[in-house]
Length: 283
Image (cartoon, rainbow, N blue to C red; front, side, top):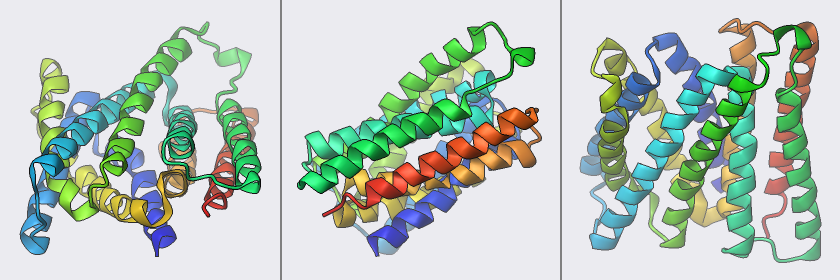
């Protein structure tokens, strides 16, 4: 059941960047719209499920939501420098690496020699896949400026995403209990990180849809964490990369040479393979 929940997350999250790009707006309005959608989803869910929210749940949830905003805001920003087909695979590889390290070193989710060997190989495969998706032709080389800036932005994004997942599992907060405080932290964090960009426009309203999609994936991830662990659940949830990356090429029509398309597809397959291998490391 935990693996199925993580797969649902993969489908939802793999669609987010594509949907947000189609709906339009800059990274400010997209981020604010997503937080609005998450808040709407969590309020409706709260009245249906009626979870018990104490001070610890409230505090951890708000911090988790604020960390997510950092991750999402800077992932959107990285797309402006790297494009969807490059930014999303790189972001996925970095997040998988970070969450897996926490899962292994902090939560001790790899216990046997076989799990450790398979896990290390999986991380190498993921990093190789991320490198493949970043290969570009000399004809469209920007001198490294946009790529370097995009990678720095992705580092900030990764720190936020990893913290958002890890802190909930660290304090053993249940999924249904976490989503309303999380959404509150997301909304407040979204306002603080986007108000300078004047995000209050029609595109923010449109992107409420992406918030609803994200929230569906979020609750399935949170429910899967206690069942199959951080390293496994998060790695499986990220296999939705195939949707966003290939969608960037074939749906959003991002310009790529035939050589680049081959490397991007190969990189996606490697990252997915690494994610699946990480799934086998769960005891």
